[in-house]
Image (cartoon, rainbow, N blue to C red; front, side):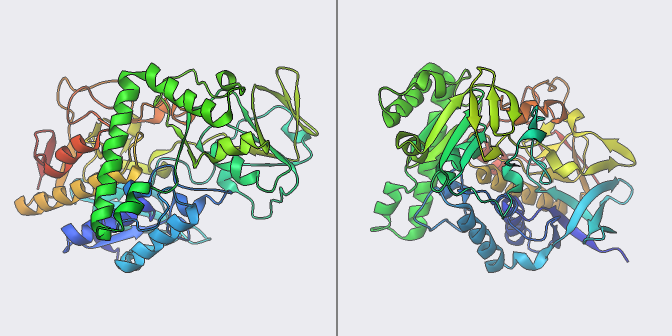
Length: 483
């Protein structure tokens, strides 16, 4: 007999653990199951094992609101974050609801039965198994877990050293005393450079074009000070809102006065690197601040590594790999024993799961996002997508809270299905993720759209989403309910 659950959560990472907690608190009578394709919980924080892996948001906002972050470092190492997730799952009994090595491959909605059938492959033999649920909550992240983006570099087969991608970091990679070239200018490259430079002979960060990089302390002096006088919970809440509001203010300035913020960020790099450093070439992007996510250098570690001569930034293009390194279009050649292709993620919503509604295949790219959580034409279905301009968890928790409100509303009135329907005049062409980053642009045609008016637009604004998802009307005229 096929098992049935009120809710199936797909993914046991930060989003899935948070969703499970909110279900336990706000929908205590609901049965739920978490299915995880990998053999451990943690999602991103279990998958990525490259040197220096850390958060790129402060942990006061990236940590759960129901279990405040208490470590001193606000910018935390990956292992510390993973331990925090494990402890949270254990403390709240969430770990007992997880089934590992269960990869969801297909989901089918039956309007007649008002339920989803979730098809999975389990274990190393990929045995086909299934369960059913009344509501499906996808907490799968936004990228392909199996492999990252790896361009086809001319002459790569000639290179005598090792080529690695941060997403599949080999445990046996030895770079001590060796020449390392890191290709890329995003957050991963900015993290890798100071970490690998500690033991490598030299590290070169090869970028085609610069990114905005800013320094901030890895610990929050205000939090450290407040802890002396206030209870930990009060301190955490104050720090959380302080960081939310400061982040919003900085983002708004970036969009309304981009030239001012650009000058501030570039000037900060110049200050850290010294007056003679060529920031015009290596730290002056062609895009506006927050057209792409800003890169963080905790305690200015990247700048310090460059200043001390342990790392170099080269801004150029690759002509081809050679036996001993990389030949650039400028004619220069970079020597390398190890090449790290920090070339980005492969964006993939819902982990490639096939969706069928009454035997009709649904393409997410043809749907419209509703309240940043559901999709037009797909019943009893939600997807967690965090903010692009702030901590992922802030939006993830709002999505979980909204799903709980929706489930309770349906129970109160006896509804068995809820499906968003696009209101006339609300359609638009803008994708739900509007960054100009390479990993987004490569997958732009796969993304759902957002509309031109509420509730089909994404604000990237926590207070507005808080009001809409936590306090706004559930039955707002855009969802059709059925028994």
